Length: 396
Ligand code: PMP
Image 1 (cartoon, helix red, strand yellow):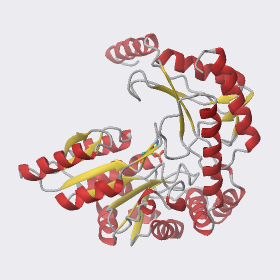
Image 2: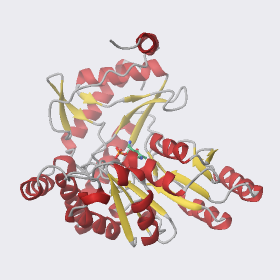
Image 3: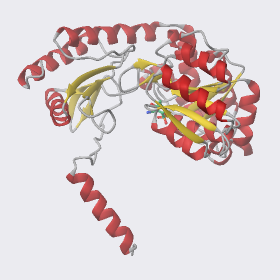
Image 4: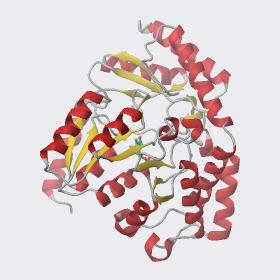
């Protein structure tokens, strides 16, 4: 029998969440996560995945994974530091370093635990971290875990960053100071102002940390935001995930050899959690090889992103100021945004609503993530459904 206190806690809090409309009922997808997905037996145009390049269902990655299972089995068998480091993990890390233009790379089981691992391996209670207020939850948790002083910086506000960096440095209170940012912010599709951030980092001797989960495969001809700005030699930590454009699962840090060597002995998920499976490592390596060989998928992603943006804008939707294929459709009021997304779903478009507290009050939006795998016909159909629902609800 479970504890009365726990039962009471769960009953009260679940009821409160449901009452406030904040309990997220999770959809089950009954098909591969491609441009069309089946939910509740009904096919939908999928505009909600991070599978930017369509690689999650790519035949070449599937073959690489199947071959790896045949040769290596289904599990790595141990943590990396005992005997779970397979030849496949080394190949993946060598490819990642080549892809990112760094001396070395280390891979993790997810992007989330990569941030938990990397920040806390380097920063401690005598340090400070300047963190953009819109940074991803895994960055926030990684910062908290490190016990460093967290200094929130207004979103992409370079004056605020400079001022806070100056204050932190001049206070003499901290040993190390880090500046940490997403490369691409996934709610609006805007790009971090890396050239200015690096300039400030150089001026105040800050460690620089860029989580490029949404920029890799998308910017810099695929190599990411840091490459997009030509800053490969200036950024200390280039973080990425293998779960979005790469289409598989896992995370990584690319950087100088000493940094990677340090992470191999000090980052706890690397030391204490089993390595990713042979299939995942092989499929991710294949994906990176494909990205390095050709920009075809990257180019198609941009073409599709621009096409969708143009179509929605022409209809009169507010698509914000995205600088990437991420296409928010800003509706405003929270309830209308949620109803809008529901109506899209009924008509055959799967695009999730994102509302307060994830984004500021009154800026509720339906976020669209077009991919390289969408056809023009799919996008045309999605735009037509947007038009129908937009007119019906008086949004356009
Ligand atoms: N960082 C950022 C910026 C992200 O958007 C995400 C995923 N939402 C992650 C890290 C976590 O990556 P993963 O899904 O590989 O754990």
